[in-house]
Image (cartoon, rainbow, N blue to C red):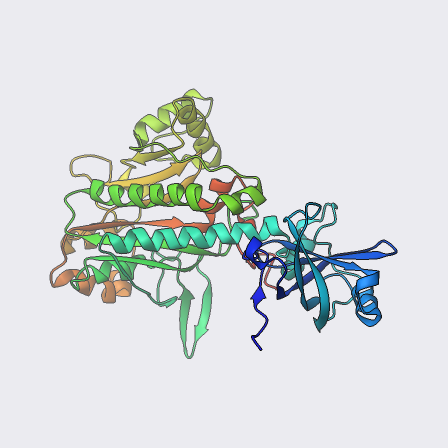
Length: 438
């Protein structure tokens, strides 16, 4: 006797009609209409209608189906029947049900109930919140984004690497660091893999990328900032200019947008989102021109100031009017950039860039200072103690090729791409200064 196949809402086809299958999932809803009962079973991909006519179902099974608590986990064996009334075009008439886990009542929040729930309640019960198909679809898109990212980077000769997340000093010189006790020493959670990915450039691994957590101890309560996020970082050696780096970032983001638009339709539909692929090439706006545009919009910023949230929005509005969702801001003042960014000789500028999308920064990068003496000068200029960075400087003292790279926040990109209101929507269990559990 052949074993009954286990199916789900995505792979039950017309050829399964009049055949017995096993389906597993959560009890979303039960409706008892006298002579017939309906149970809606939900799995990762959708829902399945279980139809139980009283005359055809054994009394004990009928009672169990009618009395099962919502959100209980069950395994149901039954016959697949074509149906014009069922949403999926079929229904399953059950012959057996195994209750794998009974849900308590009342539920901490509803899954299909049309009731507004406060964000704290949602994130306190995130396991239940993510049973909602539209919320879970965000993470299907996030997973697809990471697959597309890997696909592009590997195809362009990049090796995936992993750098330490417990570090002795911060890449940005000590600002917004989480301090921790490391045995008998003081250590920090890494803000970024910046110093390590640069050191790798001296090894012969001349193209690397990393996907990993980054930590920022920022006292921010905004929809854009969290304490822990996934950072996509890349570094490449033997570049001719920062344009080489920009081309890679432009290529990988375009590949992600195109791939999500083409392959993510099912999940985008659940979210109610449409992804428009930004047109190529991304236009370049110099920092000086960006400052002029922002000031013309009514803001008062001086040379060297950060554009800020409102400035980014103002520039984004102007670029949108020109039909550009994605664009570069380049040639920032050298004083506004970290020590590892290369100065543009004879000017106040640096070989640096931001990549903005619809009025928000997505990525930052540039050409690095690879010359030992110049790098030391940059560090001293920034008030850093070079002895604290000896491990890093050693990699530059014995042959370091010209190189550059970038860092991009994955959740920030996903949230903006999908038009979501808060970066926390793209993080399974968000961390900010008010949230440490679950």
